[in-house]
Length: 229
Length: 229
Image (tube, rainbow over all chains, first blue to last red):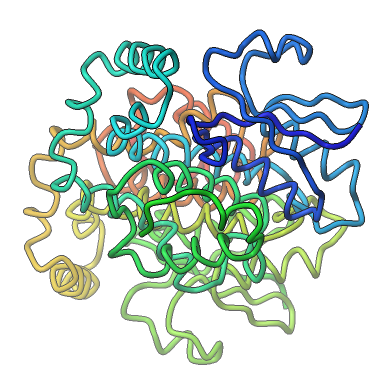
């Protein structure tokens, strides 16, 4: 029994849509661990019943089943201590990075590209996603992402803490990427896969950082279908 | 020769004005190290010539002179390894916390309270500060902080990554504070000392966290003159 990661995909199984899945797949790649990606879709909750969990990512590593991106990271650092660490030392400041990412980067991106995902889904999936997201936002997805070109500068401004850091060092992990990088990177892989909007075109250090991360495990991220920039 | 920390003060030497100084004094307190605070003021550059540095904080620890808040933190963790660590493991994510703090918290606070500092300074200092800050902002300080009550909700919203984290854990360092906490705490000590504006009145978990930090080294932070809330 090998190593398998359930990941949320569009109709194209290479189009991984959930940032949390990217965190885990990049973590596995960082550990030099092979994985088989098992495409999972919004309406496939039953398929995860064996894990006692309703959402991906779910990792099956031999006999072990681990759900949730944070637990997967911890499992990998414990089970594979000789491979490069994901979290070096106290995990607490990595949780701050995740909180910033979720409330600023991820929330900001959702308001810019939420309407781009449904066309990449099968009919049943599309109906589920549109309804659940329109309930969450309280409006049509096309309204959520309306006038988005005009809102891009504000979004880019919100990235200033990361931009300033990456002007001084190659990655959030400093000389080499670590889990802080993968947390943020995951949020940029979703729009890259679904949206023609050029989120980072004017944000040089972040764009270059994302390119480096795309390149560091080419078989995984580089081959994902994407729009670019 | 004891341990001395040069800190930027108002006319009242207990009113420490620079967030970077608070980072260092809290770091010393965290290490259970006594210090003599040496009040320093904007126009006192000559007094720091011995350190080869133009700005506070400057720490004199026996024979060693260390300038810059980051270098002071590193020095303390190396020189006093048996005392509680300031940075536990990889310092890189702490740099992210500092970047977020500087670009969001500190920059936001400056636009809310910059005009409150000058009245707490002697005439020479006041003239220096007003000129340098008005040059930086490109406008009068009273314009910088204009309509600030109306801008408070936006500032508080920008604290959401910290607020969400502190809803789940006692401090940024998780169960006990570490340097990530002191970095952010320093930025709140400046407005607390100079401004009647209630920055955190509606931000329960952050207000409670600041109170805990104020209380954990009472001889230092708790005795500083402040406006409260």
